[in-house]
Image (tube, rainbow, N blue to C red):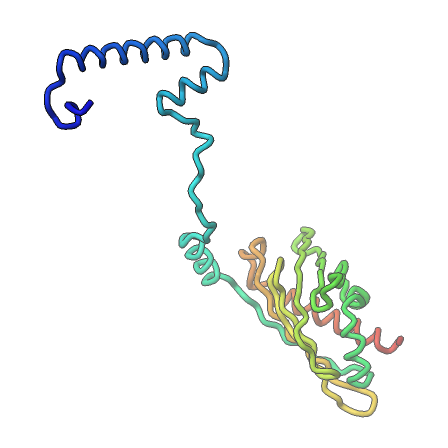
Length: 225
């Protein structure tokens, strides 16, 4: 052994010992390979220096948003079409009364026929779920969105922005005009849905008609309260 380590040629005696040791190892491996027991197979694999690939630890790879995904999102935003609508109307009620009624979002379907339902998110009073249903251009449409109700100004302003689903944002302002009337101003902005992209120029007057009709229904609703 020392002669091999030192780089000198092995003697006849050391060579004979090496041949006997190698022959004994070959006989052992042959015996193990012919055995059908799992334990012997495991021992054979171990002696050959191989290991199961499934036992190898997988490298940690953090989940990250790809640059390509960011680029596509930026490109999409460049081509997004937004429409802005403003509708005003005098309502026969003090600003405080009109504000209180409009602040109850679950009442919206009573004067906004295109809103099928509005539900406050349990445990999150600043969030509301909206389901929009309407028919136009000979087709029925249904949109969902989750909106965050932003910090209001009591008796003067309510505003929101969607954080999921149909992209929109807006505000409702109340201006006192006398002891028993106020001006209600609705500002509404929305992203043109992909399905309407070919007729985007028609979306603004269509949505303006819906919002105006809703405000007229609100004015009538206020008189009944």
